[in-house]
Image 1 (cartoon, helix red, strand yellow):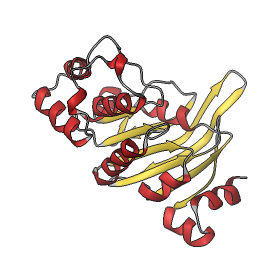
Image 2 (cartoon, rainbow, N blue to C red):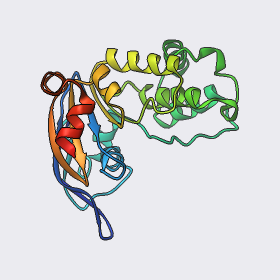
Image 3 (cartoon, helix red, strand yellow):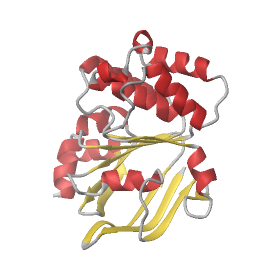
Length: 230
């Protein structure tokens, strides 16, 4: 579970997040929607410990990312929108490197199991520079979940992916246990996999509710977004 209280983040004169509060519960997929610059990626980066913030609290499984950062982030996985990889490494070498950083045991089995689930096992021994965007996305996802985190942050996880890869990732997200938070522009993705959605605008929460409640009221998440957030 991730609990965020009164969180504010500023970039010079621009307020990216303005005193926002979120609860991302266990065994649930929560989506965050908003236009570019609404604060979605900033929020995930703060929760992942990548960005500092000006005020507020972020607690992951009851651990503060300020006072107990190691305990808070140990059980967290983060998939950025534009993951960085060492492209001269093979997929397998890259994942072994991540596993060594996390001091994981049985890394080979973890890699084999996850690559089989995400249907990329035939490409593990090719250099990352030869991978398509979808293949890189799968490798990056494996690197973010191979330590079996309870909490998972995904920034635009299916953007630009081919239909088959997108379908595989959606299936994985739906079936995993724990807390999953997705930042996305896609109302269709929200309808397919999310339990709850927050609408952000200019760093503020303008609305949030259960996905089914929005669909019942407006007919679709797209219509709900334009009615609630515009």
